[in-house]
Image (tube, rainbow, N blue to C red; front, side, top):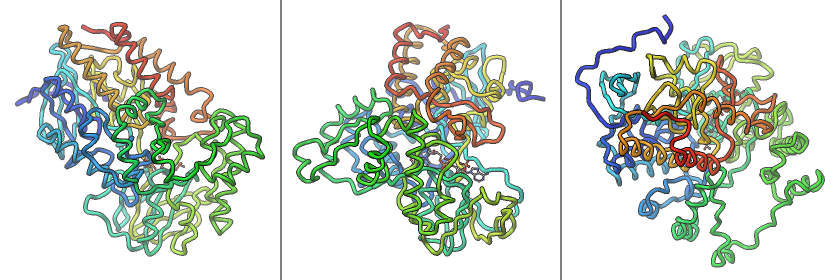
Length: 555
Ligand code: N01
């Protein structure tokens, strides 16, 4: 029996009725609760964790922090909230961001609308009643005309299928489901994966472990975060100018304001002169090399042609290699840590604190899986074709089934009891990343086809939540029972998503990333997010509304 044929007609006893069910209580779910409640709806959110925070609740691994400045990685929907929280660092660590999420939940009294420690297992659309029937792993049954998936784009942990995993005697951890009570990492620790999570965790774990073995399959491009304490005058300047900062964020390509308190005359004196930005595009390769030497590691982020021109990109890759060889003292280890065979800008760029320096430590061993692949996990460690590594603890920093995984792990069924995971078997299709044809009144926040993961995600979330809330308000005010993306509109949006990605490094033929679904075995290769920019996306969403919800059927 395929999942489409399996029974979708469960009988619902003792059903609790709401106007909207929200799945997830991370930053998207929290704002949804607040916004829909403000609009007079009854809302119930279902959350698998014991508290709010989503990504920042689950990713408690050592070294976890955001790589977006805190003053911008925060809600902009409430001016008093903006004034009520103090950040301590330019880019906050996980405990502080989780603290902020908890503060928001307290301030807006959100928790009473959330069922914690509960996972949604299925949601089925009852066509006759135009109602979503939602069931949980605790046996709860809920119904609501609207169901909103605030399940996160990077929340379905990916643990690769490695032979013998169940045999390992020590703790097995995933960075994205880190135990709340913490973990003893003082022994021999193995970590698989050197993406954003691994790169953050490795330097911190190296300081705790007797020995750390880093199992690396693909070396990545990572740049120094240069994180610092947040100066009180900078924080104050932001708080005084938040209206402008938020407005700039909302209409920017990536959710960053590019507003700088440093430009304020009163602050400039204390900062000293700022170096001139290197010329973009017109610099010769020699000038670029010089700029690298003068300004340091991150300079190529300023040459926009690096992301469009393979020659400019290749020069950046070469200079990156030089840098790795300068920092890492063992040439063989440096060679293993040097990315090759794919362009800079294909995978998510990473910011780190002392990542390459960590490999100069005596208690850290890099295991290059390109030289010898993983064979199996044993009772006491991990075996590659090159040898066996004795371990007390094994950590998977192996990422997520991004953008689609959290949605497909729930048995979501739309018209005719058709399952989302069947509809998406050859890759996801959405209209604006907000709705799937055949699934009326089901909304996705930060879904595939949205700019979410390529932007400051809180700004992207706010846009989605406000659009969805306004849409539901429109339906209710005008006596419509359902809204549903049309298949042609979803198809056209999918083509547009592909079109704008064409020519970027994200889809270079040698690129394999989670943006393309390439990190999950058997997942259809397709560029998942919308790279056209958040500001442009917002304008399109507004245009759709102005044209009477063009591309949707309202019934
Ligand atoms: O996951 P990843 P992540 N055998 O998929 C390796 C956000 N984030 O959790 O490249 C051996 O990037 C895999 O190797 P390869 C951010 O958007 C943000 O690190 O597939 N290795 C790779 O090295 C980020 O992009 C922040 O060859 C295997 C690693 O595991 C996203 O989350 C912090 C393997 C996975 O890297 C995901 O980051 C953290 C196998 N079978 C995360 N399978 C910040 O804001 C996978 N790998 C700073």
